Image: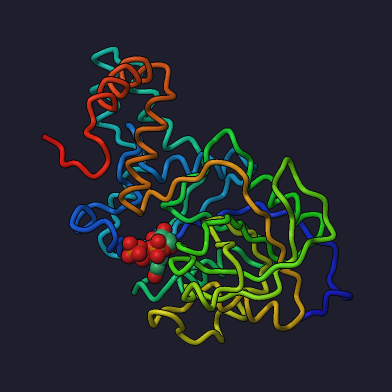
Length: 314
Ligand code: UTP
C-alpha cells in the first residue's frame, strides 16, 4: 500500500457498484421470491432510483453484484421486445417510454456473489470490473432523494482529497446498533452544500449503544479507493459471520490511510426496512404531479379519522 505522501493525484471515479445479493430477511416473506431491490416505490423498483442517481452523478458504468433468486433484476434492466411491441401496437407512448427508461439509464453489467457472505465480500466481486480506479458503491435498498446531491458531494471530496469517502447520518444513539458507527474529528475540508465533511478516525459494525463511538451511522453510499480490495481479501468474517466493508475501512484508518465522512443533511429512505419503505412510498407518491393531489386529499381525511395514539383502530 502506498503511503499518503507518495499517493499519485486521485483520478475521479467513473464506475458504480451496486450490491444486490443480500437476502432481505427484514422484508420476509415478500422477499422469499422477489428481490427487495425490486419492491416498487410508487411505480418503479427501488433499484431504478439508485441507477438513476449513479447516472446523474456522472457514473454511466454500473456493475450489479447479484446472486441466486435475483434473476428478475437482470430482466428488469434488459430490453423486453414483446412488451415493447405490444405497447407500440396500442399506441401507449407513455408506458413505452417508462419501459425503455430502465434500459437507457446506464451500461449495466452483472457479476454473481455465489454466497451472501456480507457486503465486503459483495464489493470484492467488483475488483476485476473496477481495476485500479476509485469507484462508488450504492446500496441497492437505500434511496437518496433526487433533490439532494450526496453522491456528487462525495465524489467531489474524493477527487480533491483522495482516499475513501463514506456517507454518514446521525441516527441517534437509540438506533446506532443497527448500523456501522464511526468516530470522527472535524475535517480540514469545508462543508459541501450544508453536508459537513469530517475525518473518520474509527469504525465499528453494529455496536451496542453504550459502546458506539458516536450516533453517526454509515449509510449506503461510499466512494472507495481501489486499495480496499487488497484489504477486503485479508478481512476475516466479522459481525454476523459476514465479511464487513466497515471492518476493511477500519483497517485502512488504522494504517493511516485517509477516510473522509460526509454528514448527510438531506432525505434518505431505507427501503429494506418495512416502516421506512412505507414512508418512502407515501412521501414520494404525495409529491408526484399525477398521484399527489388525490393522495394528499385522501391522506388528510385518513389522518383526521385516525384514533388517538394508544387507542385501537375500529
Ligand atoms: P443489507 O444488510 O441491508 O442486506 O445489505 P440484506 O442482508 O439483504 O438485508 P436484511 O438485513 O437481511 O434484511 C446492504 C446491501 O448489500 C447487499 C444487499 O443486497 C443490500 O443491497 N448485500 C448484502 C450483498 O450484495 N451481499 C451480501 O452478502 C450482503
